[in-house]
Length: 77
Image 1 (cartoon, helix red, strand yellow):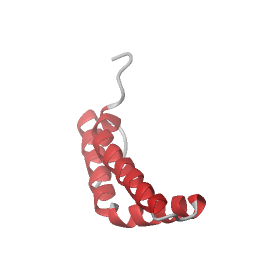
Image 2 (cartoon, rainbow, N blue to C red):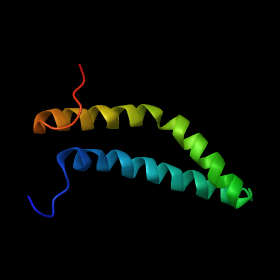
Image 3 (cartoon, rainbow, N blue to C red):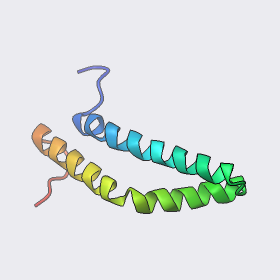
């Protein structure tokens, strides 16, 4: 198992990548609209956080299921 990420991290990777991609798209849109870069980053984080909240919940549940299968980590009761 050397060199491999824990199961819960491998399960979370697609969700994390989708959220980062959404952030990059939002930042690109805000920067194209000539928003101040610092303000664009802050607004992008807030907007993407609100838009991808359901995805984050799915990510958390997938990680909990993977941890429960592996017998490690917190289990949801």
